[in-house]
Image (cartoon, rainbow, N blue to C red):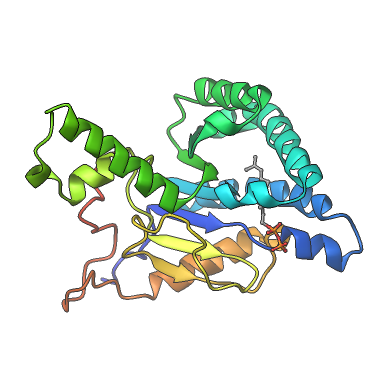
Length: 252
Ligand code: FPP
């Protein structure tokens, strides 16, 4: 009997190319972000259809604050609007929306919208959609170092007890398994400060397509490529298909 096709449990996506997509059409960059929301909808549908359990989207990096104020403001409004508009459909699909990153820097309307969608979708069981907002790996790891140092200073933790598990537990991503597959659209081949610790053994996939053009077929192609990769986790034996990472059972 043939082995079942390996489906990644967690797919993380760097949604790149919105600006170029708009510029190619002689439109404002923001128009690309609006179309990007459509690609998010498509991705959620395709993930559920394929049985992917977690999707993380890099929606706003700590570096994105350096963009022109009008683009940052427009993105903030788009986040609020999308969250409000999409909540009913996400609930219907059984999607739980949650976020990683430092939300304190966001305007209060954005923080409230995010809180609302997290609360209203909390019981979703088909897919956990993790929005990385004001997120970067280096700031996450720096924050984790601070958390662990405080626990040591408080006498709760012996420095000798600090291991990969304690570090993982101090990250925003503590409740979630590591990504199995990281996709970055637009042909760029960088991780840009995204889930660096968590992606240690992830398969990487770099399609040429710009994010607003990312279709269900593109998602399926990424999964097909993943299914043909051999994941060895630094070992030599071929693993069974599925999700055999050491952290895969962190949560269900
Ligand atoms: C990168 O493309 C994209 C972003 C920085 C923003 C992504 C945001 C969305 C797609 C909206 C999603 C909304 C929700 C609610 C998740 P870029 O602007 O860097 O493109 P470029 O490299 O072509 O300039």
